[in-house]
Amino acid sequence: MSADAILASTKVKDIMTAKVETVLAGTPLRLALKRMVAANVGSLIVVARQTPTLYKSDVLGLVPVFFCLRQFLTGQEDAPVEVAMTTASITVSSDASIASVIPQITSNTTWRMIVLDEDDRVAGLLSATDVMRLLRNSFEKGQ
Image (cartoon, rainbow, N blue to C red; front, side):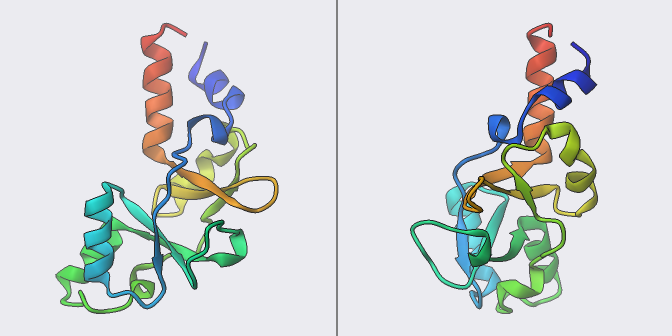
């Protein structure tokens, strides 16, 4: 099977990372980075309030580790996470094909997207690494 066929036939929900980590708006970057390291994740979903079930309306943005590091290097480790947060093109449907989200995931500078289910609940995160893993695994299996 070609890479194009694999990407077209695989849905976001099939390869996303279901476990997501959140951070409250206003949290200092140094604490957000500490949370990322402790949870072994590359980004946090920024929320206005902590709730057991996250909906799209609860999401303020996404803060990737490298945006945090950039702020650290300029001495802004106590700045709120919002200074390192992105809000552009960060959500995708869990039923979308991987092929359909490639343009978004590669153009939004975070290389990550928040995955929403059919009820607009946060279902997980999709990263460019997830896509690369799909392709690697498919080619290793000889598909």
